[in-house]
Amino acid sequence: MDKRLRGIGLLGAIAAFWLLSSSLYTLPEGQNALVVRLGAPIDVDQQPGLKFKLPVIDSVQYYDTRLQTLAPPPEQVILGDEKRLEVETYTRYRIASPLRFYQSLRTVDQANIQLAQLVSSSLRRELGKVMIHSLLSGERGGIVEQIQREVTERARPLGIEVTEVRLHRADLPLETSQAIYDRMKSARQQEAKQLRAQGAEWAQQIQAKADSERTVILSEAQRQSAIIRGEADAEANRILAHAFSKDPKFYKFYRSLQTYRQALADSGATLVLTPDSALLHDFKTGPAGAKP
Image (cartoon, helix red, strand yellow):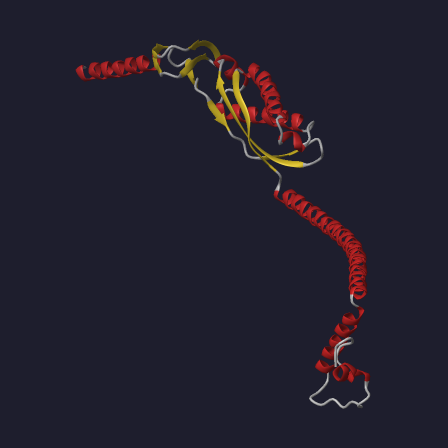
């Protein structure tokens, strides 16, 4: 009998401990607790500490109140100019309303799936309106802000507060990048050929102009040279004529000496002349007017 009473008492103590432990739960800092009774949410608890609930019929769902990051895989988006772009985004959000979150999504995994779809649809809608050069200019910030506003508005009824949506990476697909690179290379090569041809044409024009100017300069220099030489010859003849008029006999003798110098300098060691040669006249008689 005592053993039965002790067994019943032990079972009662175990049942009481189980009921007590089932009636208590702990809410840590940084989390919200949603109390669900028989599948229906009845209370949201936001203050940390030791809490009570009905055993068996009540269950508790915990939701983190801190910021969470969603980074879905990259996806290809068609832009307004029909170009494909591989875009990678990241989104920061928090669970603002545990009740709405539980009613619409239940779990964080389901929330990530739903939020990734919202971001993807907004991203495709907005990028489908713009050209690729808009993403490379100052317009990019406005485009991203519009995507964030749209995602925020559509996520609010789900109990989610979106704080940030950003483009982590936006690159052309590999095959598109190679095609664009090939087109750019071909365009640069064509431009280089045009520049070389234009440079060669300019070089020919410059060379032709230089040759023309050289011809003009040489012609002018030769003309000036001929004029100066003619003036110099005229001045020399004038001086000679003036000198001849001063003493014709001496001038004739001086010219004979010049003739001897040139003739004898160009001759060999022996010079054969007739005795009556005019070249020997001055050697025989001396200068005109000299005394014998």
